[in-house]
Length: 150
Image 1: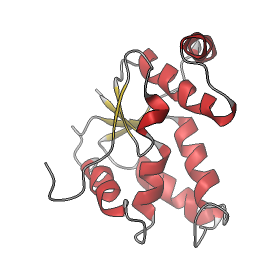
Image 2: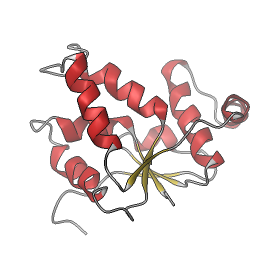
Image 3: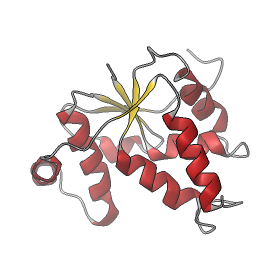
């Protein structure tokens, strides 16, 4: 059963060797080669990944749509990475969270991810945007550790 969600930025950095976060991100993604890794993603995370890696304003060099789709297929083929469905009540859940922790603009996507996590009993997210998940009851966020760090 999954226990940890991978945020979009983990997948993005795992794909770009020049990024300073690449080694830690890659190590975490490679952990999913173990069927018992307990890692998961949401459809939203994969859609955000596609949007980021194919946008030359966000990454360089941008991936082609086909390269991005192949990367997503490779992630989904990892035995220790589960694709969680969005629960039917995800909108109701993120509305409740937005009343507890008000957000603006694109910050709502993090609340939607948190709402889906809580629906599935997932309490931890690996991300480089730890503050995006602070103040959400039942969710802890942590950055992946670089290789060689406990």
